[in-house]
Image (cartoon, rainbow, N blue to C red):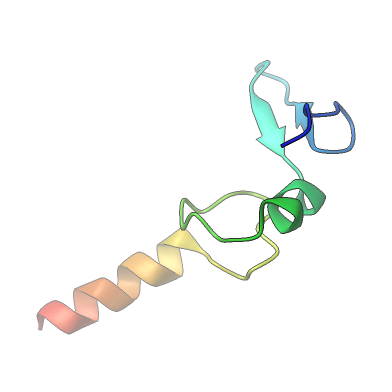
Length: 57
């Protein structure tokens, strides 16, 4: 894999943390199911966890 490019693959947020862009996620080619801010695969951690709770009932 090629080196990450700031502004294209990621940016630094107000706290100085690296945030991956949707473009980077698409380049990577799969969803990690971590609830990433710019997930292009539609995964939302809160919705996914809510679905797990329903399964336990």
